Image (cartoon, rainbow, N blue to C red; front, side, top):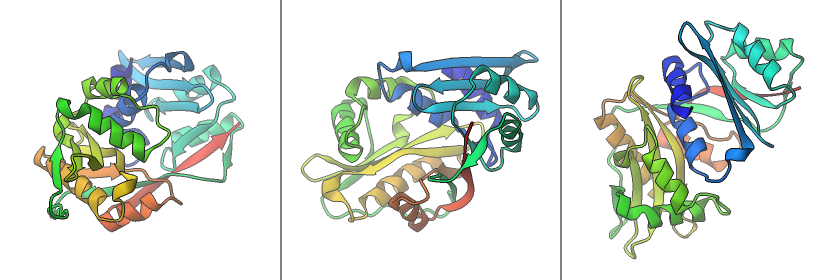
Length: 266
């Protein structure tokens, strides 16, 4: 199911679309045991997927509709009524459908979509004794441990991260960490490559609480972004929340905004 959804996402990707193939992989596989909370639906036109919906219990409705078939947005909303929906400000075919169905735009927290050209990236710099590198399967336990410390409490486990590593389009050469002298992972950056559109998404990124304010998150991101460039990608994207410190972090790294999310409720 996810691969079919990703095919539409990859076909539609642009800076006017909210979804990247990495979003779907991370959200589907980073947790285990949530299948009963989810419901998926696909809509086809001319022999290919033209819309999908992912209902998440207590978390609203995720959806994507091909702008060439805007009427499918009405079908999706009719199939899953009464759920909160987040869209990109450029997805006018979805905004129009939401307003036709009586949804209203909500104030509050939103995500800023940011992009970074991959030319002229500096080399990552770390203090003496630290190492910047990509991970291997042998690093699984430490890779999960640093994620859990960054996002405590986290539902990511060794089992779920193993599922992430097995999912398309995960690549270990785009999963970068900063290793401390004591062997702990101090920071990390995972990038998902859409090779067709030559764009990588940073998701997730974090720095261990014991190692913050030392430039290690920046080093992990630069290492991963340089590896992304070596795979012939043109740009990286990331979606921080507008009022969180992460937005300033990405601005200092050189990312620039190009869109934002809008929240709608019935």
